[in-house]
Image (cartoon, rainbow, N blue to C red; front, side, top):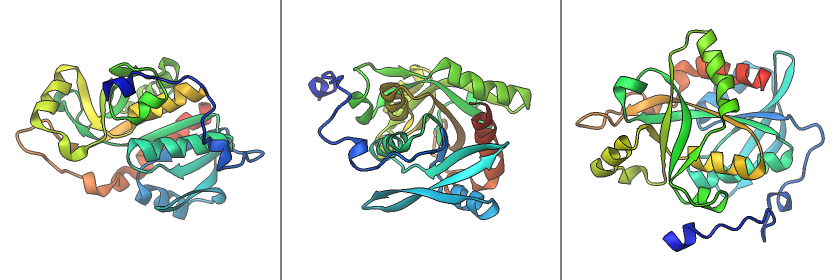
Length: 254
C-alpha cells in the first residue's frame, strides 16, 4: 500500500470526472457551507427561507443543495456525507456545479482535554490516516491548512470572544480502530482532535485550487481512561445556532 500511496498522478483529467456527472449551473453561489449533521441542516432549513438549486445523487439517497441568503449575500448549503471518500465526492461535485469557496464544519473527538475541551477547533494541519487524500495530494504524513482561510474564522472567533484553539487534527478512516496505541501515537505527534474528513477535504481543495475554511466542535472525549460519549449523538443540534452563525459570518466575508 505504501507504493500505491506514494504514486501520485498530477493530471487534472481522470477517466471519470465530476463534470461527467453534474452540469455547471449559471449563477451558482460562489461560497458554499457544508456540515455533516443532517439534524442541523433540517433545523436551519425549517427556520429560514431557502430554495433547492441542485441535488447530489448517490445510492445512499439524494442530498439537496440549498440557496440561502445571509447579510445580503447568496450562499449554498448542503450536507456532507460522513467519511473521507463520500465527503470528497460531494466537494468535487459542488465545485463542478460552480462553487469557488467552501466552509466545512462538524464534530470531532477530543484528544487533548486541557487544550481543546469546550473550544472551537481550527485545524492547522491534519495527519493523513485515510486513503482519499493521497489521490489528490502527493504523499506526506500531514497536510497543512491554508493560513489565509484560517485567519477568517480565527478573526471572527477572537472578535466575539468565542474560545478557540488552532491545532493539528488526526483524520482516520476507521473509527472502530482508534486503539489506545494509535491514540497515544497521534497525541505525541501533537494532534488535539480526531475526525474522518479533514485531510481529504484539504487535499481536494488544494487540488482544485479552492480555498476552504474548516472548524470543529468537540463531541466525544478520547483523552481519558474510558471513552466518554458526551453529546456525540446530539449531532451538534444543541448549539446549532452558534455553529451556523460562525459559518455564515465567515461566508459573508469569504
